[in-house]
Structures are given as structure tokens and as C-alpha cells.
Length: 121
Image (cartoon, rainbow, N blue to C red; front, side, top):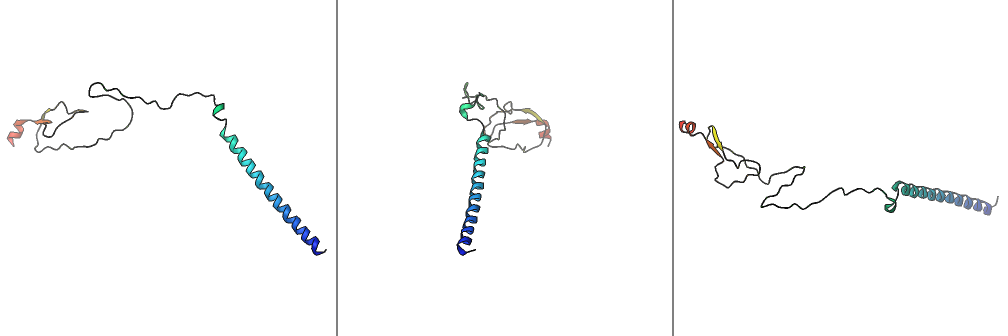
């Protein structure tokens, strides 16, 4: 075998390997893109399912200076205040505004203590 035939066989072997590698890579890319296009399903033009909106937004209307919104969720107060008495005794009266949504000013009387027990101390 002469040098030319050895060179020719080497080149032929290399080109065959390169051609097979390119064919495998091309086939892999083709399968990848075909599988991706099949997995997406029909496009928006083919879609026949008509569903309503998932979220409905409304603007609440105020009646007077307050309005009510009925929804589920969690509320966190802006500020919480602990009520701690300066003296002990039996509570005989509670301000009617001490309810959900009640508002107070500094110095308002929230509770009244039985004066008989307070005077005894």
C-alpha cells in the first residue's frame, strides 16, 4: 500500500465519521424542535375554549364617609395599642365605641371601674 492510498483511506474514514456525527446532531435537533412544537398544542387561533375572566375588578362606591368591602383575606392593623389599667377593680361600664371599627382620641374614657372597690383601696 502506498502513501497516497493510506492518506486517502484516512481522509475517507475521517469524512465518514464527520458525516455520521453531523447526521446524528441534525437528527437530534430535528427531533427536539418537532417534540417542542407538538408539546405546545394548538395556537391561539385554534383555541375554542371560551372562559370568562379569572379576576373581576370593581370600583367600590362610597355611601357617606364609609364603605364596606366583603372579601376574604388578612388585615394587619397600622398600629396596635395595649390597654393596661393604672388601678385594679371591677369594670362596670365599657364605651360603646369599643367595637370593630371604633375610633378614639387620646384621653377618651374606655372603661369605668366600680368606685366602691376603688375607694376602699
